Image (cartoon, rainbow, N blue to C red; front, side, top):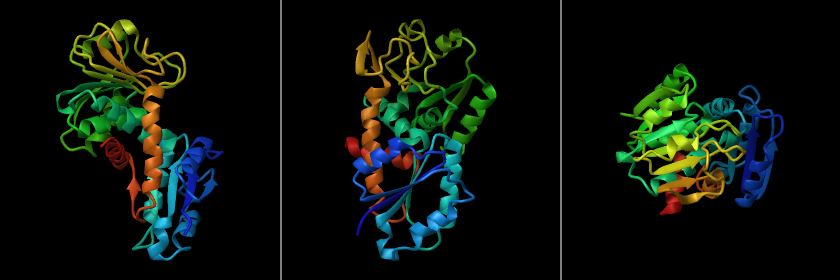
Length: 287
């Protein structure tokens, strides 16, 4: 029986990136829908649920994508609410690549750090990738400084993670100038920059002198770099004793996780792949 992936995208045009990755992951048939909302998704989910017998439903799966992550989260929840009993299919949520990118970044850092002894600064921590990276780090025992331009937004992101991660060690930080970053970095071992594309968040003069800093990860692929003097191609590149990763250096792992997650959807008909589940797929790939 053919493996069918139904792409549910919240944007006007379904992501060509996600379409290519799905095909490269080996799906037999790809059906793509755009402008999908919680209001109009139910017939699409029913089409996935009711066309094959319960023992064959593992051959159909749903992928939630689009550039607006909050819309993807809402859609993901609506899909789950539509299922009942054995009538369900597996679903993956990766709007804007948020889950796969965050997983790849944390896995890269984990090659060099013991998270139980790590203090991490996440720049752009209220964005979709930054908040997920902070969640994954907190889950693994790291102390996380979650930075934003707004202390209210930073606190709200910390509160959201607290509801998911028991005993999370989180500190919200409103960054108004680079002196605050220097103060935070006195105890920081890891920096992940997950801010908006093309925005420099951290000058080299702020991070290079930091004695405790061991790993720097910049997830911005568009010039200028989010972290100055980190190259987009860096992959554990040693810069004055600090290991650096750029967006493409992390991107290879992100792509492997993305493909593996799609393939895993077809193992059973009841998988829900979100942040933690997608990270665990990355862990399995590294094993």
